[in-house]
Length: 107
Image (cartoon, rainbow, N blue to C red; front, side, top):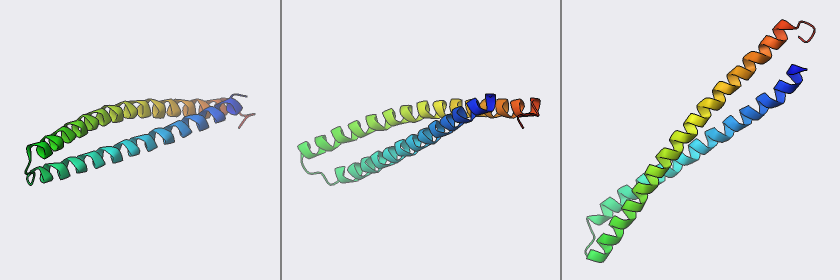
């Protein structure tokens, strides 16, 4: 009975792990795009002739830097959650293995 219950739980945790890994990849991609835009703007600033244009680019860089900071925090939180889910999965798998080993009628 424990095995029938643990399989769906293990599958659910595995699915959650996959979702977290995808979120981390997406966050990393967004962060790389923002950093690329920052580099582009910094290069463009060298050629800015008007004060307004320069100010606009500096404002955009500040917003992108704030976005990168937010994405870093989000990525750290997701990584912590992923580690917790992986630990939970290991415990579930150990418990499942132990229940099969302890009850030969089920194995």
